[in-house]
Length: 164
Image (cartoon, rainbow, N blue to C red; front, side):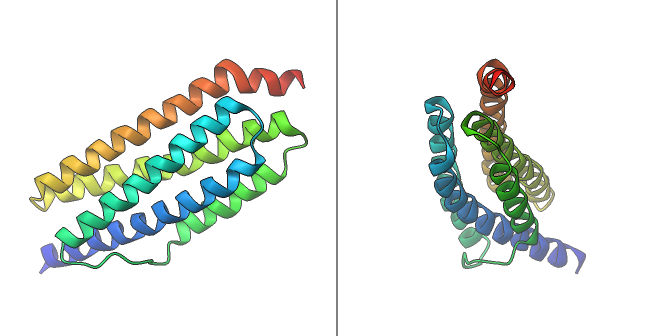
C-alpha cells in the first residue's frame, strides 16, 4: 500500500517537472529578448534547448510509468517564474539585466537540481533503475549548465555589471 502511494507521488513529481520544463522552455524564450551580451544569449539558448529535451524525456518517463504527460499545476515553478520576472525587471541597465538573467536561470536550475535528484532517488527505491539513470543523467546535465552560468557570471558578466 505504501509503495503504491510512493509510486503515485513519484508520477506526480514527474508531472510537475514536465510542466516546469515546458514553462521553463517558454520563460527562457521570453527572457532572450532582455539579453544584450552575446555570451549570455548563447547560454540561455542552450538552456532553452536543454529544457525542451528534458520535457520530452520526462514525457517518456511518464508514459513508461503508465501516465499521460500533461500540464499539472506547479506552484513552485510559478513562484520561481514570478520572482525571476521581478529580478530581471529590477535591473537598471542592460549589463545588470544580463547579470539578472543569469541569476534567474540559476534559481530555476537549482529547483531542477533538487527535483531531479529527489526523483532519481525515488525511482531507485521503487526498483526503476532505468528511470533513475535517466533522471541522474538529466541532473548531471543541469548541474553542468549551472556551472556554465556560474563561470560566465564570475568571469565576465558580474565584472561588467560592477563597472557599469
